[in-house]
Image 1: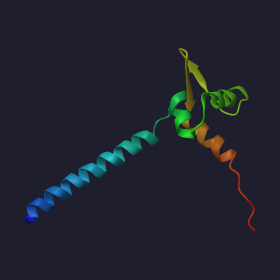
Image 2: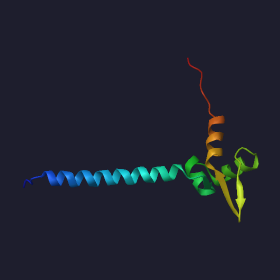
Image 3: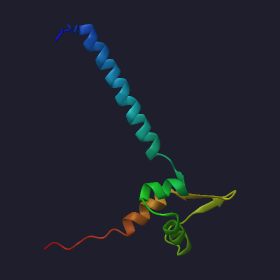
Image 4: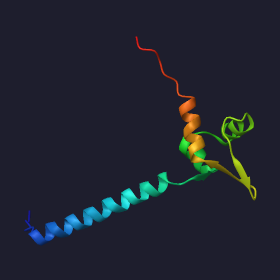
Amino acid sequence: MPTSIITTDDLRDFKIELLDDIKKILTKQASDTLKKYLKSSEVMEMLQISPGTLQNLRINGTLPFSKMGGIIYYDSEDIQKVMRDNRVQHPSD
């Protein structure tokens, strides 16, 4: 097996690359969480529900929505509120 020598310059370059990658990941996560309005497909993916279930949540008034130009938008804060309000806690044994 051939061996290779790692220099301090190599380690510094690796550190810089690693920090850049971490910054990109954190920036992407921050931009994903700051999104104010979500389309139906994004809500279905986030909640792992079917189109029919999402439609039922709209029809029965569980999940508020806005419709503009034929596209339905959901406020991410409303989704979080519905999830908090419907949280089920089991009593301790």
